[in-house]
Amino acid sequence: MHKRILAICLVTMFLAVAVIPTGFATNSDQVVITYGETTYMSQQYKSVVDNYFAGKTGFDINTVESKVITAGDVNKISSGYSGKSYNSNQIFSSALLDLNQNGEITVEVDNSITTITPQMYMSALKTAGIQGGHVYVTSPVSATGESALAGIMGCYEEATNVEIPENVKEAANQEISTQAEIINNSNVSADDLSKLVDDVKQEVNEKNITDHATIVNIINDYSTTYNINISDNDIENLANTIEQVQSVQDDANAYKEQISDIVNSDSSSDSGSDSVVSSGNGFSLDSLFNMVLGIFNMFVSNI
Image (tube, rainbow, N blue to C red; front, side, top):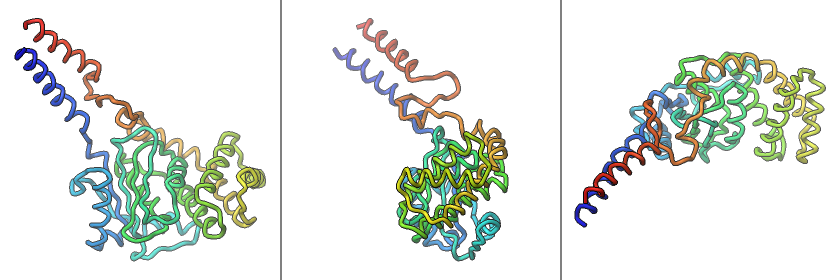
């Protein structure tokens, strides 16, 4: 009896040692933070952001690679199409990218972000050819979140060491900015608008539509389908935005190919299954259990 108990204890200890380090391994090179420069310049604001990221991810934030997104970085992308210009005291939004959680893209947005939704960020990132990774967005004060996309894309550039083409960045940011403007101009919900934009983009892309009038008609059709009331002026702006998104798809697809081995590959750690992350030597949960069973049987057979 004592030998049987000893055998079970040994097997349990072996299982714990084998599984725990593998299951919680994280590649810090695939985690990047971008701070809005206003946040970074205030220790109080930066602490709020760091605590949010640490609470969400469990990472030691002091060991994570980071960069600062300035008003100049945001203006370089936004001013050309929207005319918006930000000052250095207006860039609060910050983002953390974790590529260890790859596969389907996921975005979590803190309650401090008041306008842009997770679905809007995901849609804009897909516009840029980005399909994977786990993104967290926050701000130490209430912010619309419009400028955060520049930081999110900066995270991907840092993590992959591949720059996103400027015209692709502009199209993705215009998508965010146009949706924010429509929300401010109407009573449409952010979720309803995001669904409409996704569906219009998909149809335009699948049919390779470039004609402005045709895109306007598609927007009107989906507005009727979803019972969304958007002004004619907003529909025109949205059509211009989707027209620009469609025009950069070749460059977005080229960027997607460049980062596909890093960003858009499947990851077992994000699949939700009870599997041990591969260490590169063909190790798996099934092989572990078979090994443990063999050890157990060896001990029992000698009892």
